[in-house]
Length: 367
Image 1: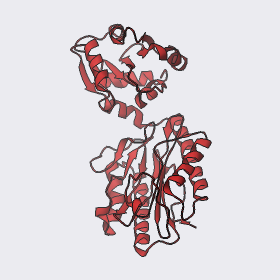
Image 2 (image 1 turned 90 degrees about the vertical axis):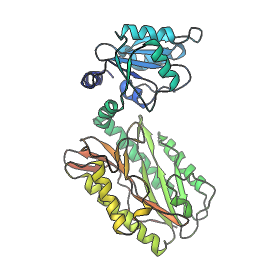
Image 3 (image 1 turned 90 degrees about the horizontal axis):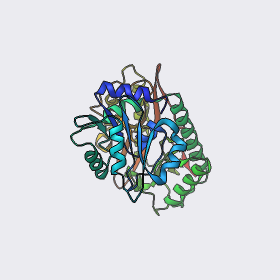
Image 4 (image 1 turned 120 degrees about the vertical axis):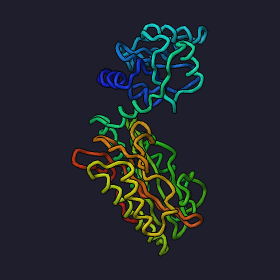
């Protein structure tokens, strides 16, 4: 945070904020490198537009956070016996906040009890959604962030390769997913989300939970997984076939492959937006006659969160900045038959765009 603090405070002043109130989650990790559980004990970072940030923290976490964050914060520990109210009130006072101060909060993250505590400590404050400011800061990844994401991509691709080499007809979805997750952990990472293996008709569900279904001849099998390295995530989807696909599923696969390529090509164009990338991928599928079966946006931002801005969807018209990272993942889903999705992680560069994921996109057959 010591290196990010001047940029954060400059952005706060530009947005008219007197302070930011951040609770445990990815924004606190971004701002201060702290990974804290969002438990029932109040933890809140107050960052004024000028001056040293404050951290209200449960006493039992005090030693751990000081080891990580050091002198970044002024600390306001509180015990279970006294509760957080007085500590938060002291932090608010020392930050120079008063009734009428404009305080940015996380509309999608802050819980009601945290909001009520802040309102009680700072009555009359203007509590404003800080999501646009935080998005502006986090969307552009620096060199260190991109390097962590590259490692996460390397791990997820290598472990996918290892897993596919072990898959055979008759294996259950959940057992294959377990193989992949164990490989991710053995590589020193954590799964970024619940690893998905969806076979046959289940592959037509974009958010299938791996189950007891055994792989059968002719199944399309969707593998969707990610790894987390130093807090940063990767996210990849590839679709395989057990044996040989039907003629229709072969056509579907080729359409999705072309849509993925069109999306990646659109991302490399000057001034690319989420809307332009979504349109490029979607037009391929619509022209192929399967438009109604592409039932989600083309992609989402990725970084400390698996899903974060920017979103690759109609209506997202702001040009994507250099350093923005996101997925391109068109899909076609035929209910009761099967589905196909091909997903890549992409970063906008000064010269266009780069696909961080490079795992082969051609249709592989599982023996």
